[in-house]
Every structure is written in C-alpha cells, then in structure tokens.
Length: 214
Image (cartoon, rainbow, N blue to C red; front, side, top):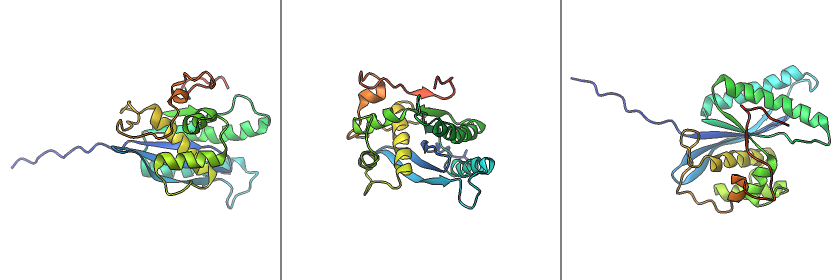
C-alpha cells in the first residue's frame, strides 16, 4: 500500500511584542485567529534577580537567555519593539535602553525573525487616540481590544501587548508577515495614526533593518 503524504499544517502566525528595559522587559505573544488577535503568553524578563546590578555583561545575558526561551517556545513570525525616543532629557536612559534593544535585535537576527520598531507615541495614538496617553489609559485600551477581563498588569506587559497589537494592525493584510484577520472588529483603533496620515502625529513606523536616524 502506498503511504499517504503527511498533511501539512501551517504554523500559527504570531508576533512577539517587547517593551525593552535593562532591568525589566515586558513581552507579549499574540496569535492571529479568524476572530482577531489572541494572547497566548505574556510576562516580564528580569535582569537583576540574584545578580550584581553593576555587572552589565551578566544583565544583558539574562535578558538574552530569557528572550531565547520565549522565542524557542512560541516561534513568532515577527518581533515588534518599542523605538527609542529621538531626544531624551536623560541620555543615560537612552543608553541603557539601547543595551536591551541590541540584545533583542541580535536574538531576532540569529533566527531570521524580522524586527520592527514602533514609536511609543504611534502605539499610544493608535490605541487611545492620544500620543500622550497615560499608562492606565493604555492598559484599558489593550484590555478592550483583546477582550481581557481587566487591565493587564504590570505596565510593562500592557505596553508589550500594545506594541504587538500595533504590528498586528499594521500587517493585517500581509499573511507573509503576520496575517491579521480581516473579519476582526477593532473597536477603538485610530487607523489614521497607524497609516501615518494624521497631521497631528508626525512619527512614522520604521524597520530596524534599515538605518535609524535616532
């Protein structure tokens, strides 16, 4: 008897959102379904538990190892990361954020996963209508869009979910990257902010495989 060929089952389409921080990084994994985005995992990766806070090498290694565990388990199609501000009142903050972002880009590149940056104001404007939205407003907006029972905690996780949602909406018709559901109902999304044609919000979406001017 001829053995029938194995049935090919397409891999779930997932995006990993990251709210980078050198001490605590929020992460969230969204999966595209026929009814819209679904949360499959979310949490934080910490770099200082049981480690010397001044040992930078060990801290970035902890972030790298933690992210690799998430990537291995969920195998996302793309990673979405918060973009650095163009200007910081405290330059040290930008430097510390850059340490964390560099680790995440390396992990993505090693696995040929595209890494896309989204400006924080763009994510806030998309979900709340205001680029200056508070942490609490973002939590409630994320809960609304994902149908959660309550605002996600802590703030790092809520921000990671927001970044993942931003990428989900941005690639709603691109199945090769994420494949959002056309039938999904987006209850409060400001599509003008997403598409970049809102005159009150000049920030644009950028990809980190191109040079950044920040």
